[in-house]
Image (cartoon, rainbow, N blue to C red; front, side, top):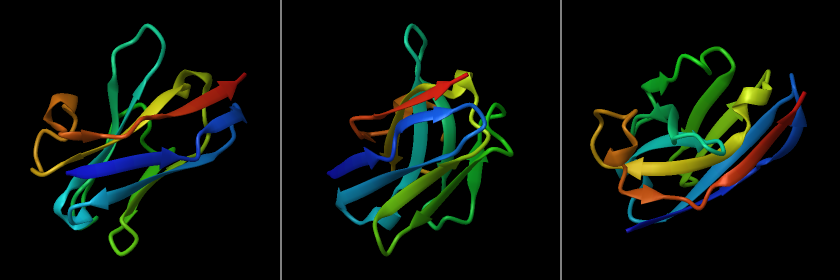
Length: 124
């Protein structure tokens, strides 16, 4: 079992930045691929970014490439999402998720553990 707790969401103006954190507890953090997904009202949950267990490989949705950066600190059991140049369309609830296998990282159904989500609001 892994428990995930996100933090760092909030209200920001378009063009601004936010840094989300996801703290994990439970089993060994470095055993999990970590991903971030988001869901806006009336829309399906969508993949944002993922990072391999070691942190050496990252996977980004086209919509956030060049603006968002995922990183992890396995010593602190934490994964981060640095979001720059935020746009109104980035507004959503952001969820942290964990999975054991390093494939199909963009498919949310493959993630066994989820956080409760943190709200990101971007004003235009």
